[in-house]
Amino acid sequence: MSDDQASGMFPPIVVMGVSGSGKSSVGALLAQYLEVPFVDGDDLHSAADIASMAAGHPLDDAAREPWLDRCADWLAEHRATGAVLPCSALRRSYRDRIRRGCPTAEFVHLVGSRDLIASRMVDRTDHFMPVELLESQFETLEPLEADERGIEITIDRPVTAIVERIVEQLIP
Image 1 (cartoon, rainbow, N blue to C red):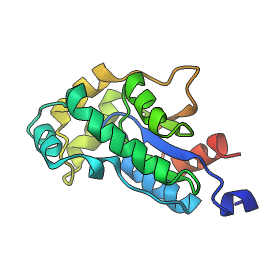
Image 2 (image 1 turned 90 degrees about the vertical axis):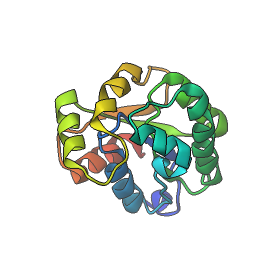
Image 3 (image 1 turned 30 degrees about the vertical axis):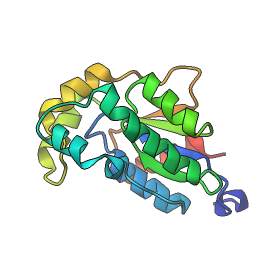
Image 4 (image 1 turned 180 degrees about the vertical axis):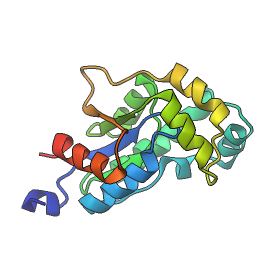
């Protein structure tokens, strides 16, 4: 790690993608590697939102906006040190809302096939999001656009290799 990196010269990073893409695992390891604060965006959802999703109901935009604001606020609080926050951020408008609260945020979009992600979701037992909502996530997904700060990373390798690729591509 360079001296700048050791002194916390990282932008706030949002690890984005559909449920089951590995946002939490990749984000936690990335934060550990960069030695910056980490919070899982799922932990910023309200109890009512979690219950709704656990029951198989995707959130509408009105329910999602306060959560996106909480994500942006947390990132902004850590602007000086850098931070990592996994958050689906599936639509451009959601990412724009996060950027309004934290303009320096950069996005890492974890990309994988429906089959791979569905198999991962079926195998996990400790998450509220049912595999039945995966299709709605893909339908909602708007990949990063050319004018957005961020990168796409495929998830067809181990988490450590994914984090290494993120660091190589995103961190100067």
